[in-house]
Amino acid sequence: MPRTLTVAAAQLGPIARDEPRSSAVARMVALMEHAHGRGAELVVFPELALTSFFPRWFMPDQSEIDTWFEREMPSADTAPLFEAAARLGVAFHLGYAEIDGANRFNTAILVGPTGEILSKYRKVHLPGHREDEPWRPFQHLEKRYFARGDLGFPVVDALGGHVGMCICNDRRWPETWRLMGLQSAELVCLGYNTPQHYPNAPQHDRLQDFHNHLSMQAGAYQNGTYVVAAAKAGLEEGAELIGGSCIIAPTGEIVALAATRADEVVVADIDFDRCREIRTNIFDFAQHRQPDLYTALAEPAPAPAK
Ligand code: CDT
Image 1 (cartoon, rainbow, N blue to C red):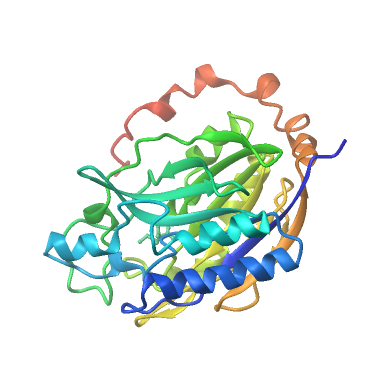
Image 2: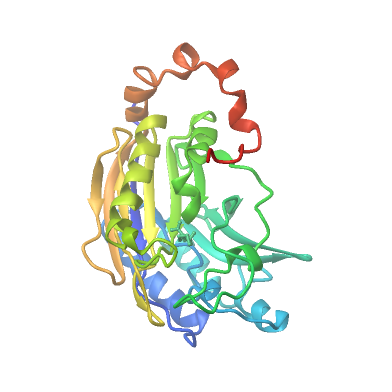
């Protein structure tokens, strides 16, 4: 019997610095209802979906930084999303900034169709820098504001398949995908906030959409997994964010792609059994991987050759 699921990537357009969480949540509920109307059983929202992408601002005051974080999930602000999911019988993936005791993480959760949290992931690959760098047109202070994730790369049995998560910059790293591939991931959900302009290498600005899809299509194909990827997109507080939210098949093909940089839903039917097309053929890990020759992958990186 085929194991199928109808999935949606729910892209969000810009969220203003002073936009309350209640407004972002209302927009997400509207996207969820629209996705449900198109048959979606799972809706994937972006990274840090409840607020503007606050790591672009240097804030010396910890009490101000903490206003961007969630202390509980669900909360009064996010309850309408959980209620809508339960009302519609839809699962969802949500990215948000999490405070847990003294630690702050860039987090994503997978929530089941009755509103229960099925899995949690905390971002491992934190890009950017720690100190204020005023030469930049905008900051990228994830290394300052978040601790490295401490939950590994969990893959859980959920929604009829094996489901993993990662967050934004994680998608550029092959280790992220392989660690989930080794757990037989069949679906990876992820959200991202990717600026069009990369101040360190502006010659890559024109390649941002290409590198976004290149990374995820490679991760999908090389591990035989579906990917549902949702962007925060458009001109947000003076910083243009790429869109390109998409659904990718285990063959690496994009099967649904957003056409705007605004609130938008894309939907596709997936068949978990198609993952086997890849995993029993060219990427049969048990037969063809050579892990005894890969030990350097788990060692610290050597200094780059001069
Ligand atoms: N949010 C996030 O991880 N964004 C990065 C931006 C590039 S590194 C400054 C990304 O990998 O898309």
